Length: 279
Image (tube, one colour):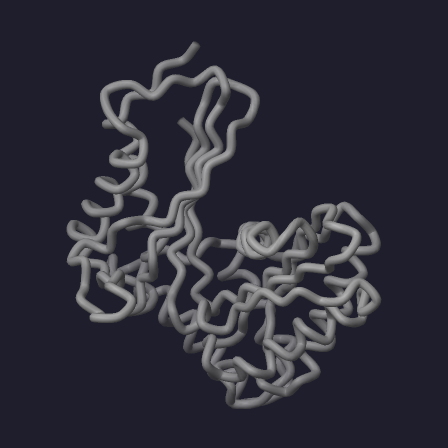
């Protein structure tokens, strides 16, 4: 049995959210750089170069990549032989978020749904937990901005709609978003489970490293097909037109009820911020 103190969790969560909002992951930076060569539009090429310059400035000046520093989405994979000591796990994550958004000078976007009154510290965070083998804890943070999140959706398709129905739904959501999710985007697709499972799968799909294909060849083929069809929409970087609308598409799937075909789409903007640490 390994003991993990809440103070360590607070510190790691704070660091991860600050770092994620300031430093674009190298894989994403490389994907945007490579997209310049693939982009056929001169305007699109210049937009992509500007996105790289923005990322460089953010890292050098230690400031957020984007002014929308997102809601604090946090994934915890907790080893079954780990024991959290010194306090409450949820409060530890919450305090880490509170400190990150205060000390990192990150915009606080969390508010009451109706009054729109800001909570003042970007809490409560959104926390997803899994119990896994081992005695450690993996913490993954995904600051998620509103512009891209607004173009996510869950739809309960009829089973007969099959793969083509799934693909049509994904393309519909991309076209519906147009320039608003700040392309080039990353698209997460969740298939199966039930209503809430598909939504969570689509969010988890966004955490798959860019350029990585699904182990299931059928799903890998769907990912390639969707990426090609999304880029054929002509939306282009930041919606100015072009051949690079998406950098990647990732699919996660689970078994579902024989009467249902749940599908969820979750779109991420070009500032695909993510950070993880293992305690």
